[in-house]
Image 1 (tube, one colour):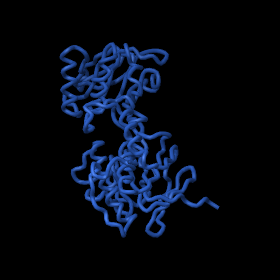
Image 2 (cartoon, helix red, strand yellow):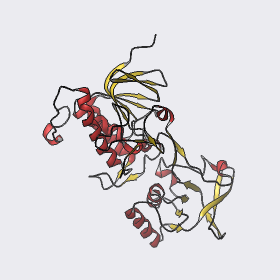
Image 3 (cartoon, one colour):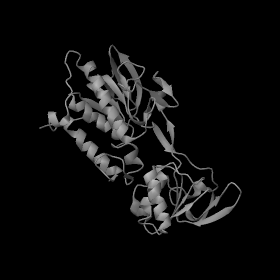
Length: 338
């Protein structure tokens, strides 16, 4: 006989920054939460892929490292005693009256009145560029993420990509590396304009090289140690870049996993929601953060935070249908636990 499900008000799928803030927002409304994440820690991508990546668009923090943001969000959620289920994936979601029963890959069962899907991009892995000998250098000279900036001190680093990760790390590693070059297939970068301006200023000062319009075509080295990145433009002109490390930042491949089988309205691997409540097509299930889609959606952490507040307020009447919810600012309600 399977064990009886653990009862809670809200089950949150995903312990990334948006999921953690949802614990806080639900807690401020008196809602208890269980949180499930396939990783063995809180933080999602920020912890698994970018712990030392600087983030510049969190209100009140001109700059904060991803790991530090996760630490603060975990501390903010702690007074509400969330129950974490790490190292497991939600494999089934079954209606039970007006509630939902979640079962995880380890056999845990959670009975919740509402579910918040805050799964980010789902299961993720790097998009690998089509290059000769790439696998030969993976893990020794080729990396798809930066966990410790200090690992690259004194190295000749070549970065490929035109988005925020590529530009932000070019700026950051220029402070510790012997030399940094960033390759992009066109002169225009997709990163935040302010970050691009900072990168261009560093290039003008001779602190990094911007190699455009080129794409990486091959690697040279021996015994797993890289020494050259080969690049070419569309006309076939080739260049050789000295390198100890190659960092291709071409985004993540996205796999929703079991979420895709739950009958939710999907749009290109995203869950369509009502922006006024973050409700999905199934009653009692909500989606927030990068996985949620609606007209005008911006994939920003701060937007996920706002969606967490929206969803928690929409959930309150489901859990407490006879209790009026009077909106109050946190400055009025006071500090949690006080």
